[in-house]
Length: 440
Image (cartoon, rainbow, N blue to C red):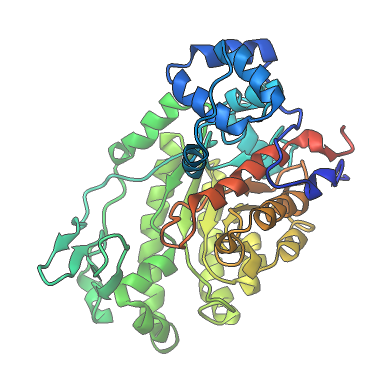
């Protein structure tokens, strides 16, 4: 099937252009009626004035609000632009208004259907997304564990205990901190260790509630990781990496017990109505995997395959997050049954490399514009161009890509407006009508 953009003209247009793609599922008259009834009309009116300073915009404001809303001072307009506008994707066109008001449903597709078609490469009407108007809801297990809240120690340090019993410390109250003492200081401690109990269905009540309240959204059950992410904290990363080589029998036993616990979680998420499970496993550095690919294939790939197989048998898809460059194990992850790979640094792999994986498999990538190489540049044209490249190479109107958002702009040192530009481009250009396919 051929999937190519219908035109490259919009790719070279000014970054401040209005989004004029004909993608709104709601008729103009309906859109105007709906926006007039919104309770925060004045806030919307002000932002619309900022977003639509053209002659056509004046006419549209008069139609929407009964008068041409004042623009305000230049400084006020800039200040409003720097916050996430409710009208991030609205242009001067009535079609744009229709698109904004139609984010919950696109034609006959609910957000849940958009995601399902994305994973099946079934031609969703628009790109799935996890920012404003997100297609996703998610929850975890609320079992009682050893976890405590952060406590101030009085010397500028903060400390907490996680669900496994590991001790974490931090000096910056906004950071997630790091493990300073693993619960298994000696591997022999494993004999007397009791894992958290994730077997009780009532501990997944939040998942059940979300399924009832948001039946039209894709529901993710959040897991704490697979064996690597959990075990490396229990032993501390440096010691754990040595254990993998020097104590393979002990480590295999530890991994086995973790896998039993994770299987219980997968069964309960399925029973609670989740559509998928998702887990974090930061396998990469800036240049390579943390362990040799050979060791990964020997010790971890079979475990991934077992847990992914269980999830698939129960009707769940499997999403995995990883930081770093993990090209050496991506084919193994795909073979093991991972359905979605969530990368915040897709350019470490190369967009073309990710696209090549899709030639032989239906792997979906869930990514924001790269948080290391692109967003920090603060160049709106470059950011928008990258967003379109990701759509054109990974999504192409057929599926296989979810437009992401990195949730901590402060930690990566960027102005939120820069990521807003990426989101706006994903929305404007991530529509199936922009692509020629065998079906259109």
